[in-house]
Length: 343
Image (cartoon, rainbow, N blue to C red; front, side):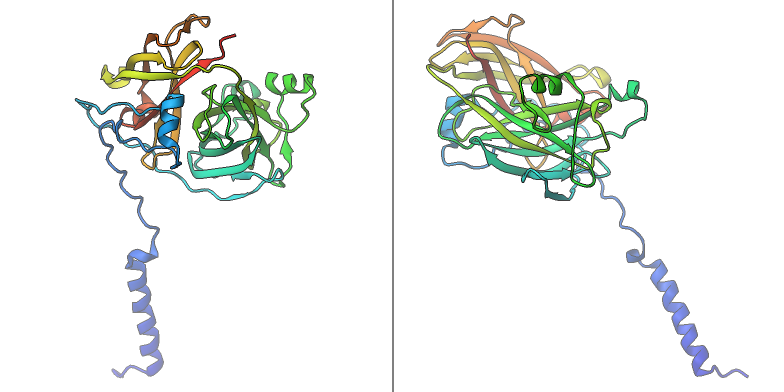
């Protein structure tokens, strides 16, 4: 019998539809997007800190300046990994905790609460998996980068925050380190470890970078989230140094694994007090203008070296570009000058 029954026709239609669905692009996970091609160093196009009414004044007062444009940009390199979004939830301290994800690379900037005239924003973190061997885990580091902002109307001589780890239940995890032991010795029993800004003198409204680290062997538990919360701003008194970077040059030297990005120039003290042990502090930015890494370049190996008012000192230093650092070749930069207190 050649005629097809209604039931048979219906079953045949479903079978054909199923084959079509299996061949549809929507039935399979979307392919990974091609990584964006990196541009040549976009030093002059570096994304600024969040807009503030006194942004121009901050740059002059505290020495936060963008480097000049490259006359001869180096060959483009592979782009940095795209930011990975992770979930966030309030931590027991009332700040925002960053939940550890699977890729451990980048987060959308996560602001914390404001305390002691400071606020903190986390931009990126790395949380490698433990090996299970404390000897190995001692050399494996949790790391986080971001910025500390002076929300007050006074200049701070130092600005600090607190790094706190949490387990899956939201309880704070202790650490066994020289830092945590030192805090207990002075009666500081609050959870977490202190984190300090990479720049000492922080003007009102200014944001400066930080880089926090802790090796995995000294974290007493499995980390599900962490928070870096404002801790303390120490008010500056008397005359203040005002280091600025001038005549900065940015060039690529070497090839392959020996390549490096060399920054050189002059640090000048435009302040009213000596600038002791000056450093150029560099934040390397991702495509969204978020801090992906920081570097420091010393102007002198003499920590007692003080640049007098109106005087200058030369600096030169390298940013290595091998392996995972290759993205730094074309990363935009933000820079600051760090002056230590002159006493």
